[in-house]
Amino acid sequence: MATPSVLFVCVHNAGRSQMAAGFLAHLAGEAVEVRSAGSAPADQVNPAAVEAMAEVGIDISAQSPKILTPDAVESSTVVVTMGCGDACPVFPGVSYRDWALEDPAGRGVDAVRPIRDEIRARVQALIAELVPTTA
Image (cartoon, rainbow, N blue to C red; front, side, top):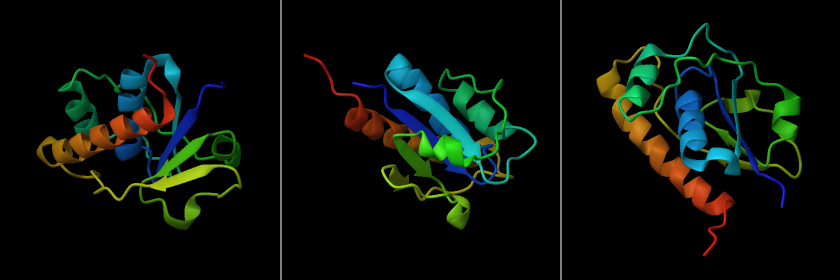
């Protein structure tokens, strides 16, 4: 079976999608290909998101926001959108999920922690769905 790939998309690719990609890469390892992008990428990853992830032992400080491309969407098994609205292209055969999450932009780490924890729970559920456990 081919390795599933997940693309996390939000507007700036600076907070929610970067945290989700960080959790998926950390928790699923090589079992899932991880990508993230934004419809209007920011200049840098949100420092509060970097700090919140560092608190749980995941370093996303080297990541940089990337522009969303139709190729990235079309080549993904699952596309998880987080408030990118109509900017996300839709292709047949791609599974879409929309995660309604607060935008951490411009907020301090105290406000980002609950968003981070919600993302972790959703990523864990996604892994359980995509990666069959072997007994």
